[in-house]
Image (cartoon, rainbow, N blue to C red; front, side, top):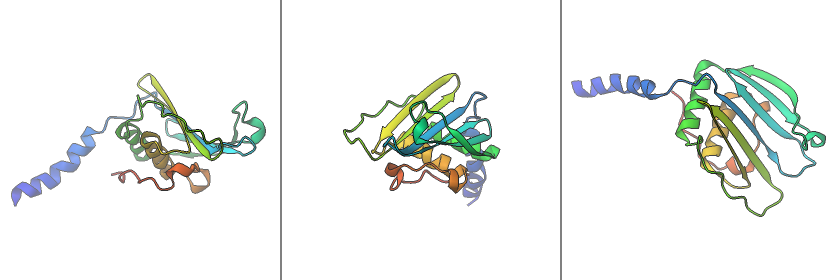
Length: 163
């Protein structure tokens, strides 16, 4: 019985010690929405604990210029949870999935910089676990009005809850 009590006490400490600290250069930019050019898409940029939300309107999709719609400060634990998901999902170093032939529908694109390495992945109308898990976790950290809308994550399994 004593062994189980010790395990129950030590396990959470080991889990928190196993999580790598968020790198000083950590940045995440995610964009998602309809592929049709006459529709606006949403973007979230995370730099440090600051999240900036923007909309890229149809007239600006060619240049990618967004109109800021709001900001939020992420708690240190929410930022750690987001970074942990990037690592756990295998996002950094992930290979770009093949695109399908569907020309409408929706897409999601995520770019992550951490430890001097930048990884950019885009998916169109298809689930891709490393990207999907990061978008789901990011959506958990921001207000509902700022969340990214991407059809392929609608049925995706949610990542494990943050500690």
